[in-house]
Length: 310
Ligand code: NAD
Ligand code: UD1
Image (tube, rainbow, N blue to C red):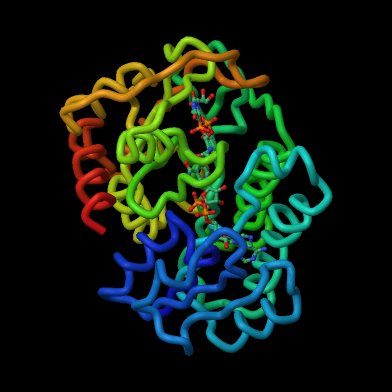
């Protein structure tokens, strides 16, 4: 069975590649804009395509040649700020790139058994109705959120119109090894970990009481592996969270316990447009057999151990 992971050299993609490499022939398509070849050193050169999802003819040729059984589409401009700064470029990647893949599969790949699209909890915007449900009001607050919403709706539509076996997953806040902490807009737990590791000061934007549904990467891998084998999920959209919310202050305390020390911290103004509370209703995936296994304590422990011994 052949599986293509777009964006496979990134944080999430490299974990999926590692997992599926056991039983599948894994191919990665990645332009290495934020990902790293070293994240997937176990993938040989013949299975690593350094290219761009906006390259329509390459996508057509690749899909026509390999006729993948499974496609997990993660490649995207992932920085919300970058999409605000350059919506024309991000739309080209996040919407046109997604359409290139869907179209090529429609035309050249009757062998396709599953196409997964990485959407985001960002589509909900700053809703006060919690937990966020699939049928909740959609209120995108950035080009990124609009593009993810468009991508998931196209994904769903290609099932309805052409019978493509597609599923979209709205990822909540995923964390784990290989998440890059180097930008101020990197995932907050990767930044917190880096600050604890280097004994530097951490800045809370706002009062630290904002909550997120933090998902350990291995729970995401579990969810994807269930969806891949589930025809019932075709044409549907699911939240991928844990169903629990924790505040930044609570996560900071967990870091203190695991590191057995504390670091300096300060509070500054909240980020503009920041979401205050967020957690997922995960009934949909639960019904398919998904059951998140990692509490924040367990996930953080494994993450910190891995990162600090790497
Ligand atoms: P990442 O930056 O580590 O991975 C993205 C990968 O896509 C990188 O390897 C990058 O080089 C590649 N890429 C970017 N543009 C490309 C293009 N035009 N052509 C080919 N490759 C390209 O980010 P991640 O956290 O692993 O995110 C993976 C997916 O999950 C993204 O679609 C992101 O929007 C989505 N997501 C992530 C989170 C999270 O908490 N990390 C939450 C919601 C959604
Ligand atoms: C994240 C994702 C986004 C995704 C969304 C889905 C990242 C980088 N962003 O956005 O792609 O669509 O979840 O739910 O993974 N914070 C601090 N100090 C810091 C950094 C952040 O206080 O140094 C705060 C932020 O202001 C925010 C919270 O931590 O309140 C989480 O921030 P972040 O990890 O960037 O994630 P989201 O904004 O939720």
